[in-house]
Length: 228
Image (cartoon, rainbow, N blue to C red; front, side, top):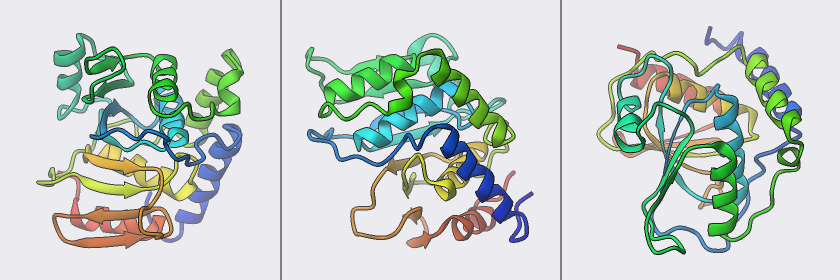
């Protein structure tokens, strides 16, 4: 339930999820940023998607997120059409790769490796070295957040994607991404704010609005993009 009363509880549980991930998802700076944003199909509660998002954040790259919660009909069909199966995460890099062609791939480990190699050899989050423990702790982080961001509760799609500035390990940013996922709201995600604003910060080009802070963003999304 979203309210000012329950927000501190949600925020604390989100902090615990970051602790379970040993702080993975610290925002990095790409040594060779992509010309165009990468496209990431994922859903927030998926343990494997979390691993991919942590490397996105650590690599400092900008991605266009197309949320694919269970029961979602907005972007899930695109994954099947483009990749051949409804498996997540699914990354598309529209930029020409070192091999001379755009890249697309499933599997969180492959995505994380690709981001490190293609965009500046960013640091690998320490928990990602832990093999099976990495996946187990990612599943625990999902349980701690009581599977938030799993089920589709679609809202009217904005004409232009929203812009979100936050790191993967940000407790408030996680709560925002969970709501964006459930509402199937497409957004361009950058781990760092380019103009020094504190994160999480949401910019809505459709309404020319900038909202800062987890609770304020959640309230804005509920009021501006109510579930259908």
